[in-house]
Length: 289
Image (cartoon, rainbow, N blue to C red):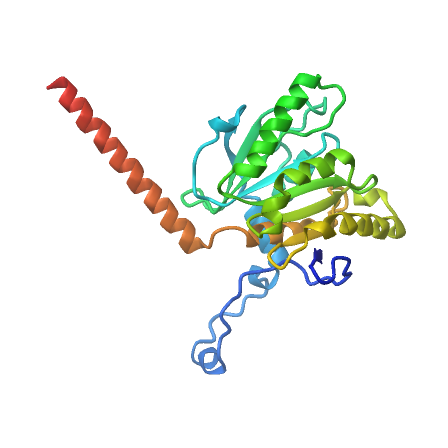
């Protein structure tokens, strides 16, 4: 995983995804309570742990218009990309599910925003938003313009959008359409309100020199977004040989709520739903009286 920074936008270091800090055990505590020593502890394999979390993804709802999207407080991660950049395949690979994200045989025909819950069913901790692919020539101009407006509004205004994962075909790099879509969310990326992860898909089709060239091209494009507040990542990605899959899953999980936050939010939502049901029942009783 390559991270772009304001001072070194073309850095080739590989710090890996950011993870939540874990409290370190003191020597005394370890001696007093050593506990079992499992041989295959998932905590020792953060990529496996993140992939297990990503596997929990399940369909939540779909919307044809922006106003139809539910209002919620969970962090929402949007997946965007050209119609033939492998977006749906990448989502299915991350979730280790064959048909979570619908991959149409005719690119550009899927024109809904699909939401997926992640984390425990009783207390979800993140939502993935699969936005329609853009730029496919077979879609009529009216539909293109309508969905361009929907995606622009979503990226500019969606209140709980916490991150965008943009799929870019590593063989072609940033196209004019990719740059145009990135422009919709650029102000929110620069001020740190929305994180950005660019996945260079189909990286298995490139040799090492071509992969390095692709990374440099994307780093140059994203350098303009780098500020002290921005959080920008770039990674080669392949659904075929699984390049970058574990790193991407770790990054996604790092943007989720903590278990405590998710449980508190679920409890609050349940209380609000119960209060609303009680109010509705009371109003019905008054109508019948």
